[in-house]
Amino acid sequence: MPKSGDVVLTKVQFTDTFEIKKRPAVVLFKELNNIIVAGITSNLKMKGIPLKKKEGAVKDSIIKLNYIFTISDKMISKILFHLSTKKKELVFKELLKKISDLKTK
Image (cartoon, rainbow, N blue to C red):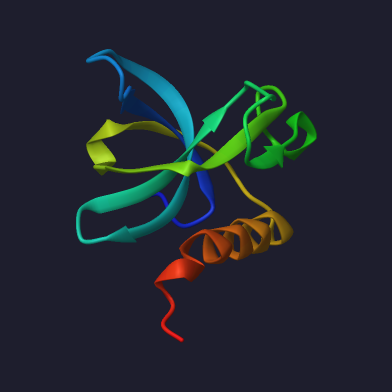
């Protein structure tokens, strides 16, 4: 069973087509049968958190915190590797920045 910080290979439906492909994603959290993930791309021109080959990625990539979606465990082909504690902390901090507008003052 995947856990927070796992990089998994999962089926992803693209937002601009009905096409479904297998792509890597980072597990953010799991609740009941829902697994919330952030997509990963090898397009280094995109904004996000760098993920290097030496960290376990197939090639240098970007964790896209602007591309968060829900999957089920049945959509996961396999767990590829686990993010380091330092990288998980960076993901957490960047997510907090993105949702800071929800905070009431």
